[in-house]
Image (cartoon, rainbow, N blue to C red):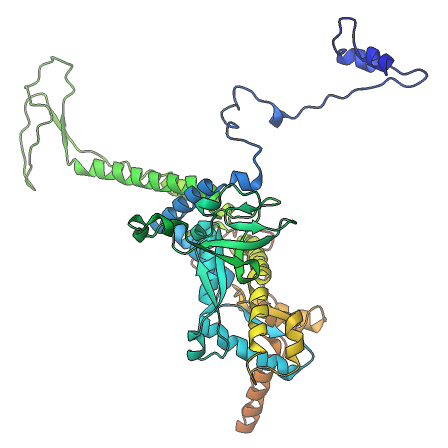
Length: 518
């Protein structure tokens, strides 16, 4: 070992230079090479020192400590409340993700039991406005980073038409926190009590919102009053970006500075245009200082009547101020910054801006593929974090209601029977092309009716039964459906620009219908 260390050192005691390292060879072997690799991003230089000044090695929960999350929540809520683009983006996310709400399909072998459960759950969902609460939770995640809901027993539900009294009570993220008297505990992270394996076992929920105006005059005990709920009774919906992260931050956090820049640029442009418009005319002179021109009082105002000719003092001219705002780059700036804002949400520009004038058919579909894939991921997370837990709690109470569910469900409810959730389908921009593609897929057996109906968010069994009823009534009335074409075959697919290139006609052509991609 000492000999090896000595070989690695030069005569003056320092590590050998790269040339010396490459010539150092073990006995009877090839020259030993020591590679010294470097990463440019790991170097700190005067040019990048300020840029990386805020980089740290904090843990996921330390980086989003309660004070950081409070500031982000307040700023995100303020931006959503005062910026029409931020409000529209948040509402679009909620509407596209939740739509009119999920629909349950049971997949057990008992068809009668499946139908009874689906009907009862649908009735309960309408009673508690499940779709509206899910949209609120998605909005809360966008502007607050997370949403909490308590599974509670609401006796008023039974009087509203549902025999199951289960309800979903939404609470804001501000109320889930560690009270002042309990802070400093290692087994609790900002209102979430952890077990020995690091799983949430309980949640601390303040009885009153910290921002309630009544707390300003309330005694100090009301500030620390809280309830402890078991984790099985709390639904926590958020996105975990780092391993071990227990709380969420607003989805629009990276875009908050951009929203501020967008508003500042817009206000500055308006202010510049108004300033120029406020001055009708300016009297100026080309004479040098102390030149031959009649003396005038600086900043003096002169009112001019309409259609009036006037005479100016000697040496002076009358000029009009030309408004140079908004500049030609104003629209381009808004497009670029909105595109950057929407990127952190996997949302295409035309959805964020509500404007598809620059899109053709191919580019619109290509951008929407990424967006709708992100929506499907969000819906899958909602199914696991919210809907499956909600269904389990609903079945556990529904089996106790006499005559509501079949007897066979009393044993299956504890294991959560096989099921599926249907969401609103996405409307195709060209229904004729989509119908032709469906017919082709069904003809060559690369899809099923269940899959095709699921794309539209509909239950294939219910749709086929409804179609059978319609056909029977049509036969009774002597009506026959007209064929799709005179030959009885689906129309041939039309040529479209599928390579993503812009249409040569351009979106401004009156015959260019692809500009309506939304």
